[in-house]
Image 1 (cartoon, one colour):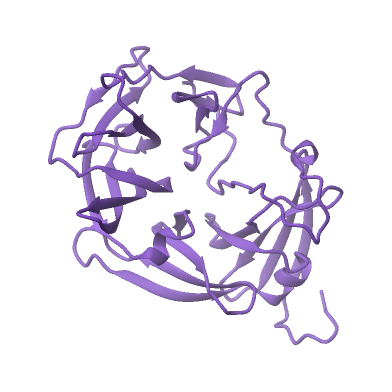
Image 2 (tube, rainbow, N blue to C red):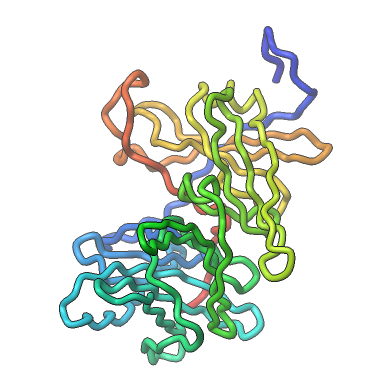
Length: 315
């Protein structure tokens, strides 16, 4: 698609339209910032932050997880992370709780399936209390998420890892740039985070990739610039990198919901030798649009899960 006044590498451009209805009627829940695991999502009731459910939008099946017992009425922050063990073919939920007055984080785990849903404590070393600051993402049987610890007014950022099979916890220190955007992504099978570059052209990112968690323990920094054609097609709206799919395409989407009467697009850009950009229009979001013009700032953000696919997994 040639654009006047721009020098672009020769590419192929396609525009697709899709409409996949996955609404679960009558379910008063919000999406937890956790990626889809084989078509399953973890959900939370907005009126009861301690009530969580697991949902398969394709089959409309929903199960409610047992309540986490209150800790003597003290305040607590509860976070849930869904994970999958490919060796044992098991789905598990990690519950991370910060209890007011307790120096260490409380971790519990629950196995989905078998009909007996019950929480059990995780054995191992104690981890100082922390605040979860990113979404959770499951890669190769490991759940990763970011947390912030505070000790003697000194703050430190970490990436926590939960081994779904062994149910062990570990951590690695990280940089503010990795957690500032609040979103971890699956980048070619590795944990990564994309951070917009300040004072740089629109669509310029620092991509931080965790090269090795156990031995080298190093973060690799890459520069990533969104293709000019994507910027042109998106109307130069603020974009974010959502991750990569199995075809080695970088998935890019808007940071916020577009105004009413404007289409909602996501973009797929192949980084390899074949310069191919795909644009997909998402329909069915009209009722969630903000009633604002393009000159006004919208506060409604969009949460994507590039790993999601239709699944007949039974809960």
